[in-house]
Image (cartoon, rainbow, N blue to C red; front, top):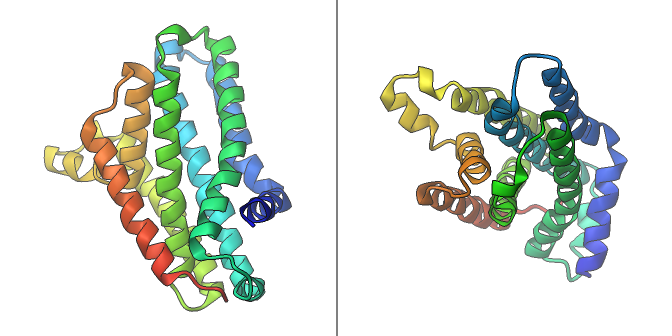
Length: 238
């Protein structure tokens, strides 16, 4: 049953190829664009790779996974699943498994291309830590997306809410995280508690320093646990 649901989520992913283009092609575009400028390997390592990995994860979790769920609610497909042994936890877990495959392929190719373009030194990178942090970030945004797609009673309104939350996190939260050093100290502290900032700084630390401050891990685990439980509680087969 889990295998079948994973296959369903993969088909849902491939059904909307523009999500892959938006999430996976744009990072490569900006990576090649940066190669024609003055950015060096240090800037790419500190900014580009963590930032574009975070964006790719958010795209998969919101414009693909959450939107697909809201759409399945709207066309009443999920009513069929209610009559099967599928439980919300299996639905969510199989969705994470299916998207992780696509994300892993993107990660390998993206880092490989960045290494060739900018002559990055991967010998000092703790890839296991980097992958572990990436998986945690993915789980965090996935359950936030699932919560967003289920919190409203109306399925059509849920689609609009997914877009609003996605762009709010991406533009407001993400931009605030990147520009945090320009903000007053109290705002810097608040920004660092936002999910995009937690993800970006944790991934940046894993990539550049081969270590991640514990409070980033605790924060992301807390977000994942809270929104994961809320997603299960309000999951709608409609």
